[in-house]
Structures are given as C-alpha cells and as structure tokens.
Length: 209
Length: 209
Image (tube, rainbow over all chains, first blue to last red; front, side, top):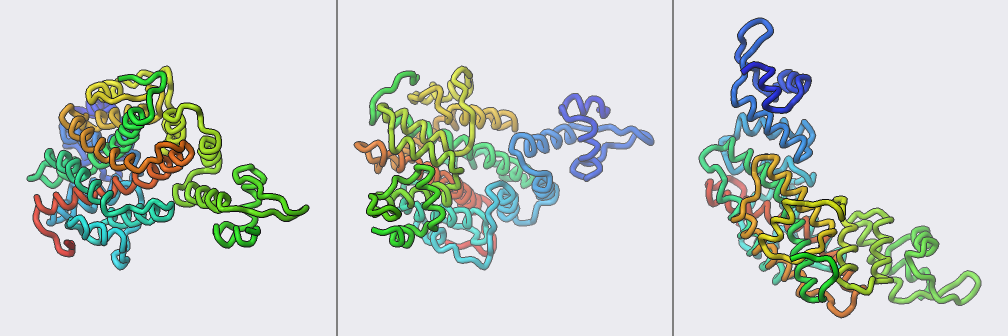
C-alpha cells in the first residue's frame, strides 16, 4: 500500500510515521522510486503496537524502543527476553542484582515459586511488603498463601493464550497483557470489596445489581 | 506525655507536628499552661496514620485531610463512607455520575456484583476495559469470570479482618489495605507469570526455588 493508505489505516499522522522511520522504530517500505515506497501489513501492525504502547499504556518512547528491540531481536533465552520486556513497564523499581530483598525472598520461598532474583518484580514485591509492614499491616503467612493461590490461577488464565512458539509475539502479548490487565484487576478488587462490604454492612441507595 | 516524648515516639519533627496542629489534622493536647500541653496515645496513633498515608502511600496532604475527615466524622452510611475514602486513592479517575460506563456495567452485570454506579472504581474498570480493547486484547467472558472468581476470593481474604463495628477503624483499614496491597498483588502476578513461563519455556540460569 502507499503511504496515504498506511496513514489512513493506522490513524497515525504523516509527521509521526516519518519520525518513526527516521528513528528506525518502523522498517522502511519497499522503495519504488526516489521518494515513494510501498508498505505492507507488517507496517500497519507495527504502528498499531507503537500506538498501543505510547497512547494506551502511556510508555515513553525510550521504553517503546527497548520493547521493540526485544521483539525484533529476542535474546536466545525466551524466559529472559520476556522478563526484560516486562521490566520496562511501570512501576520503575530499580532491581539491584546485589540486593538481598529479604521479605520477597522469604515470601517466594514460602510459596515455592521459581524466579529470577534479578527480576524487577522481586524488588517491587520487596517494596510492597516493606510498605505493608510500615503501615502496621504486615502480610501474614495465611494471607500470603491465599493471595498466591488465587494470583497463580489468574496468571494461568493469562498465560493460557501466550503464543508459546513465537518469542516476538509472546513479548507483545506479555507486555500489553501485563500493562492493561493490572489496572483492571485493581479496579475489580475494589469493586469486589464493595460487593462484599455491601453484603456485610447493608444496603446503600443507588447501587445496582 | 509531653511534646518531646510525642516527637520521639512518633518520629515526626516538631515543625511538622505544629503544622498538623495548626491545620487541625491533629487534635490539640490537653492544655497544662500557656504554652504546654499533654498528649495521649491517640496522638501517637494519629501521627502514625498521617505518616503512613503521606510517606508510605504517598498521598498529598489534601487527600490525607479528606480521609481523616471521614475517620473523624464518618457518614451515617458506613458503605458510602468506605467508598468515599477509597476514592481518594490513586489512580485519579473522575467518576461522572451521569456517565454510562457501558463496558464496566456489562461486566459487573455479567458477574452479578452489587456496586454503587457513581463509585470511582467503576470508571477505573471502564477505562481499563477500553484500554484492553484498544490494544486488541478485549476481555472475553471466560477471562472475566475467571478473574472475578479469584479476585472475589482475594477480596474475601482482605475483608475477613475488616473491623466491622467501628467505622473509623474500618476506613483506616480499608484505605491502607487497598493502597499497600495493590502493588503487592501486581508484583505477585508478574512473579507468577515468571514461574509459569519458566515451566513452559525451560530453565534460565540464575533462578531460585
């Protein structure tokens, strides 16, 4: 397709597409003359992904570049490639490979999960557990096991659709799925609290079934 | 106790305590002279709560004031009081009572939950579901039911310890519990993905059991 059709189908303005081409975030089209080129479905797809990452997920372009790099040139180890891509997402938690993360390590040992100790989510869990302690609501063993069981079930739902044989698609799926479903889960938890509180505390006007 | 002991026990600097007293976030002590007063355990407790909300949860003082107001003067309806307190937490999603939120409404009807249609988490869910659609990963009915079942189980764990007969304590518990356990759940989900990916994709060096 011509550039005009690419713009129309992707909904991305010309100046932005040109910028992505210059920055090598978008591969050049097949040249058909000094100033014209033909674009394919891969270009439409790539623009949709960049748009999802920037406009919907809200990532800065430097983070998008890292993710696209992992999609275009995955590391030989698919497990590490996925981990590195997810680490680009907020919250920005510095994972210090030399750090100890005693709370997270103890929690993960207690629930018997495998993990990369340098993975940012370990530092994220450590920070969360320390915050819970600091406000006087430390996570007890019972709560940990309860949470872990149900979080694992949710993760199984998520990974049931992971494209297992294509690392690039797996990176795309994992990054977008992690980013867009975290706020959904948080909202659903708050709404589940409200449903339960309603049953415990009685009816307020205006709620719906 | 004297002010010096209150400072020592709370770990809050004098200038900050004076500011909280001036702003009526902290009740005055019992006056024992023109410039001296005696403080009690309630003051220690209140300073710990303000510190948790500002330093650990990271709320601006205006939000802390709203939450403290709901603790000191709860509305007669405990359900509404809790909802209003949670709405103060990020993410800041504007709940428009006149708005429709079609995706959230359909999802909550599908899973049969009671909710206040003006509650901010409804708008938050709508925004999340719209984002999932926009990136080409709309939430299907099966995923919705799977998530809902496990999120409800997590919410039941959370509310098992809700101080049911004291609205002020319930507000405190709900606000702190919602704020500190959301990042923990997000981190646990990412780590559960890693554990599952590890089993699906094979071992990488450096992971621990």
